Image 1 (tube, one colour):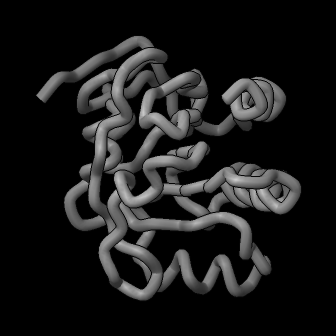
Image 2 (cartoon, helix red, strand yellow; image 1 turned 180 degrees about the vertical axis):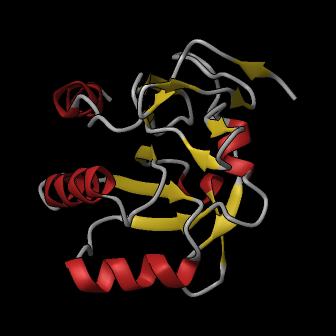
Image 3 (cartoon, helix red, strand yellow; image 1 turned 120 degrees about the vertical axis):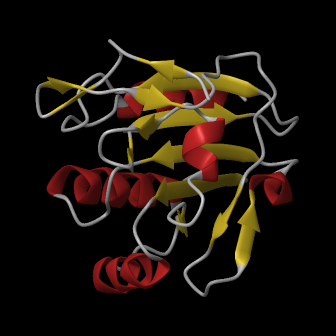
Length: 169
C-alpha cells in the first residue's frame, strides 16, 4: 500500500494518506461501497455519466454538512451528472443525515467496511481511518478530468473549480 505525507493536515496536524494517488487523465478506479440500504454500489455502474465523486471525513461534521448541502443544491441544477459522496460513516448514519437534511440529489455511500474508495483514490487518512476531503470529476468515458485534495481537512473545497470541470465534460 502506498503512503504519502505532506499533502493533508487534519486540524493543523500532518497526516498520512494511504492508497494510490490518482491524477487527471487516469482511468477512474472502480470501487465497491455500501448504499444506505446496505446494497452494494460500484462506481462502474455510472459509466456513461459525468460523476462528481466527493470524499469526506464524516457527514456529521459542520464542514462536511455544508459541503454536501451545497453540492446537493448544485446537483439539482445539473443534468446528466451524478454526485456521489463517500465517507466511512455507517450507512445508517448516512441515511439519517440525508433524511434530516433533505439531500435527495446526491448519493451517499459508505466506505466503512473495506475503505476501498479511500484506498483506490489515495485519500484514506491512516491515523484516523477517515477519508480526506477531496473532489474528483469523472467523464462519461470513465476518465478523471479533475482531482483536488483539500490541503486542510477542516476547509471546504473549491466549489467553482469542481463545477467548471463538470461543465467542461
